[in-house]
Image 1 (tube, rainbow, N blue to C red):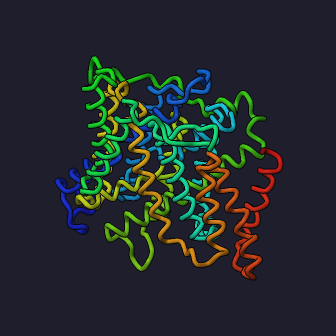
Image 2 (cartoon, one colour):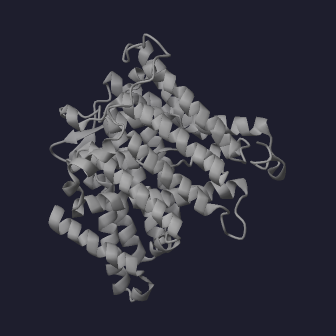
Image 3 (cartoon, rainbow, N blue to C red):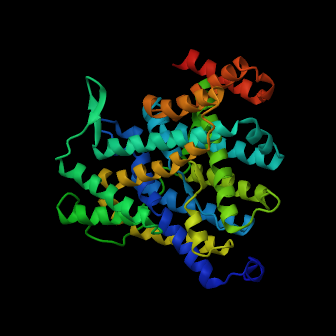
Length: 444
């Protein structure tokens, strides 16, 4: 094992790798709680049961997909980069596709499956570099920041801090409501720990908030901590149902936009995470990432596995940087993280204490981290600022990641052509321009 993961060459040992893997797990463990709550749409009142995914099955799918993806990354690419269903992509799945477009969650899973397969083919064919290079850097950054604002808005909504207002659309909620106060407490606690630089601050913030909620009678105390692993049957293989029973529903413009959005966000989120973590660990050589193809293949194959199990897109987590900071340098740290994901399966009874006020702070703080991409956009160039700004602002305002991307990608060729910079526009951007114009004409 030492030789396979090159411990001596990288100056590491089992202790450092174990601590790094544990740190990564604690930093991203919140997804085990947040993902089932998001995909089950349990915070949305009045929805028919058929629109809601089974929270227990999603919990198992999240843990197993995270473990499998993390192991593939560790053994194939040998990087200490863990994977799990991504925040933002799960919000797009639940709030934009299922809730906003009214698409059955089974069909949405099929969209995730297709995006993973396409991602895998692009990686194996070598076309991924061309696709990555065709999208302007500023628009990639804008998508990340826009998703950050979107999930922050969802967090404020779930907490009851922001509510609907007939006069001005949205307004401040009832700050005397005990559940709202619990969410605000969670935000403060999480901010304190993150500011202090504590690894796993988001996860610990959720734990402390849940405990305080139980102390004040806002959350029911669980009768047990360890229990049987929930059944995966409600979601396992559901992504394949539309293919065999209603394949005609998959061949339309709406489904194309859904698949492209899943693919686009995962594509660039993964690339950005890999570069950031690899740079921190000192893996970048001559501005190139060794074994990049294997790392991207690990990510795309994890998405395929996750979709079949029953969860939204599985992707590389930036929280892996916490593990690298703690000493992780090889894929053995991923073995530790994956083992902890599987161990977490036996703690499903704790899902009952994870309410909207407990998860809202996590969404808000993750949004803060994602919006940091704004600093790298060149706002002085108006032809770039316009499409970037429209991507960012329209995601939360239209309650749709896909719509935000579509609007920004429509305006990019327009402003660039008006500026006389048409030669800098990649043909793929013109293709996306046509696709998104058709999206608005025929689907909205």
